[in-house]
Image 1 (tube, helix red, strand yellow):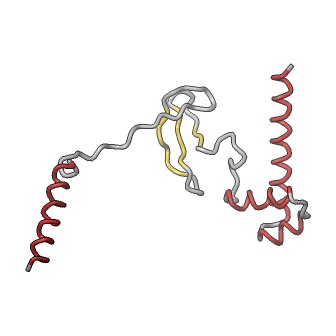
Image 2: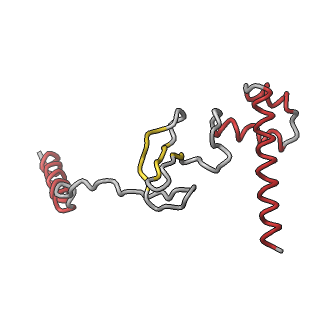
Length: 136
């Protein structure tokens, strides 16, 4: 019997603390509106415009009336390869593995591997040129 009484005390203490914590009376808050500025015209007001085939959010600019996605102006924009595969390709290339070997390891087509490596080299060159111009 004393064990049952102690369990009742614990249960009543839990219920009282739950009521006092305010979880019951809290209203569900709506998601905060995220404003993503347009990368094309820098207009601050955009709205959601569906999703891409890969699942990333697409936006519509109310000013220039253009659509863009979350990955716009990044290395992953308009790539049908997921980020993990791209990282595997670039890491393997940095480790000195041949392009055909990377193709076999990753399961991607050889031409896809070549395009990823060339795009990464091009992106790096544009970043380096931008840094040199800012230093001068």
